[in-house]
Amino acid sequence: MEARLTLPLRTIRLYGRAMASVVTRFAPSPTGRLHVGNIRTALHNMLWARKHGGRFLLRLDDTDLARSTPAFADAIHVDLDWLDLSPDHWVRQSDRFALYEARFEELRAAGRVYPAYESADELDLKRKVKGSKAIAVAHAGDLEWVDPVVGGRMRHQFASGSEFNLEGDVGGFGAGSDFSWQAVATYGFDVNVFNTTMRSVVGYRALSVDYSQTGAHGRNGLDWIQHGPVLGIAFRW
Figure 1 (cartoon, rainbow, N blue to C red):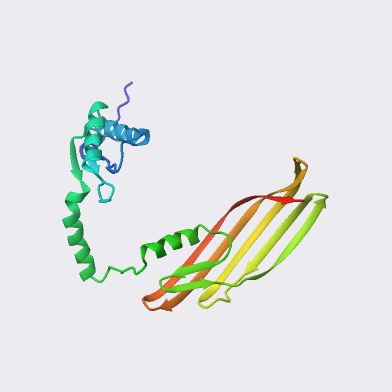
Figure 2: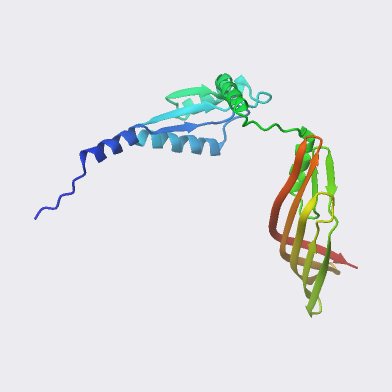
């Protein structure tokens, strides 16, 4: 008895053509030397391209004109050659700046470009605010806002030196604030270290801020939710 599996010729052609068109890319930034993580990515992409009869490309992402240097770009080529990972072809992102600008102008003409008015300092402050879990704060453009909150606390003591705390706050009283809230649940227990009572705290915190206001440059807003574990230490004496 003989068993045979056949595939339509069209399927075989499509499969073969798909495999032959494999193109992988390694895109380091010439702002420093290659590290082991870069090399792992280059090796994986080169092997995948070779396996399927495709091409392995190197694209130097030199868009950071302040830190990209020809010396680092040359070092990338030298290192890849030494590792026997030479690409089939290589390009620089900076060679395509004119193309990107042309496409940008097309988007501008179509009304799909939205200008940003924040300065570098304002953007840096927004990043810091986003990483903060302490209070509901927003800063946008020429607007600064702190939202007062009210809430309650519940404390249950299991035994001496051991307690559970539940905290909840709601806001929305600041100008432009739609609603904000935060909730914290923690378990604390006392330990003695060098004759000092230390309270260890573990728990979970969630914080939500929803703020918007119209300013000189249009409507500014901040709408996000953050949550994660809480670890803390308090000393008593």
